[in-house]
Image 1 (tube, rainbow, N blue to C red):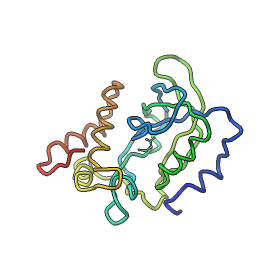
Image 2: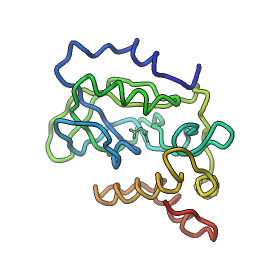
Image 3: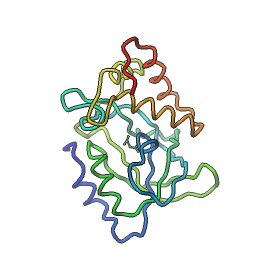
Image 4: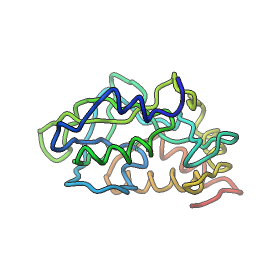
Length: 193
Ligand code: SIN
């Protein structure tokens, strides 16, 4: 599969007949909302965990030296907290472009953190069959990798550090993200965003 997913996403889910759509963000979509939204609320999805296993050729790295960014990995006993946004369907033109490096959108259920309600919405997931996928590595190795990568959106370290800060604000304990953050901050040559 090509790592540019724009056309595939447009084909799999035409959204124009809807007044609004919920989007679940678990990576940079938590802290960088560079799109208009009607409302946003912290939410959780079940059966997935956040992992820095996706390569970034277009934001936090280059095709020659990809960065490492977040994707979701299926994990039936786990859940992942993030931020949900209610957006109008036209916003997906921007989102599909932003998430084009291997991410496909899926409908799934999110549960609100502050009450018992739930809603169906979209989430972008970069699966193991996409061309930019890097896969599992130790948190220490991921930190080394992140420290050495930069791309058009800025240093890869900035992505990780901003996500860790946003998760702390949401009062989320994500051992994977915080272990990478600690390892990154312990590196003598770290590049802070
Ligand atoms: C997301 O944040 O939900 C997807 C991955 C990213 O854009 O960082």
